[in-house]
Length: 353
Image (cartoon, rainbow, N blue to C red):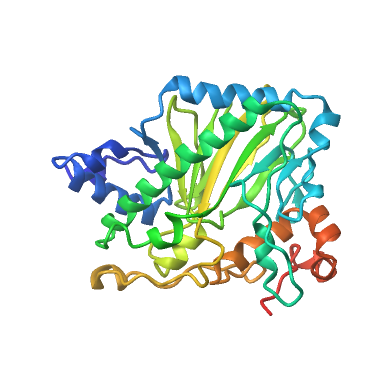
């Protein structure tokens, strides 16, 4: 039986990245990865090297953060930050112009803000410091350690993707090996009344290269594959990986950034930790990779929503997403952009100048 035939169309497959480093298993692993990245855009990842103790630690600190007094969380509100860093209260972020029934904290690499000069690209403000809970240094240490581990796994996985496409595995290193534009979201989805149909997070695609999601046993994540929504249940110790729009752009649509959502939990709160890696903000336009001819022939160009067009400049595309999702930050720090908002067009508010 062909290795690809083992995949069930009604559930996400599991890949073991340790096979990428096993000479006997590498070819089979790369064949599966290529197939899944094109036809699913999502899969479970195991063999990543993080043990359950390490995973349980980040889960523990995630729970502890959301148990903080509301005033403590709002003291580090994302609306204090032009860099889109900090705490977002329940219903404070929008997807498809509808509030998401979740609270979260957004964290990125700890870097000094770039002094903004009028006339310079507005996306330079993506770089800046985080906001941390007061008098809790252990939280900062655990989060920064998790960021480092997530970055390592993601770059290893990008190497595997490139190898699966018949390219030099380090071809994207110049964009991500040093100072990638990365972010981490710790997310809490409170349970809702059983009659409530509010979205945990609405249907969307991720703008980055790759996402690593660590979820709990509550469930709620769904992926739109083969014209239907598929549940993505919890698997102990596994990440859920998905291809982002930047990787779809780089492969001219050969790889697929798939639509996904989270349905609000009905009986128990849900927690998740999502890591996103993108090229350095100074990378410029996404390069179109020179795929082998047999793959290039299948790449028909990336998909694009007319109300949410893909921009080739990686920083502009990322900034566009932030503007649309965090309207409070946009209104406070970017009023000219905010005033372009057109709610009749799904919150369309950014035109490439």
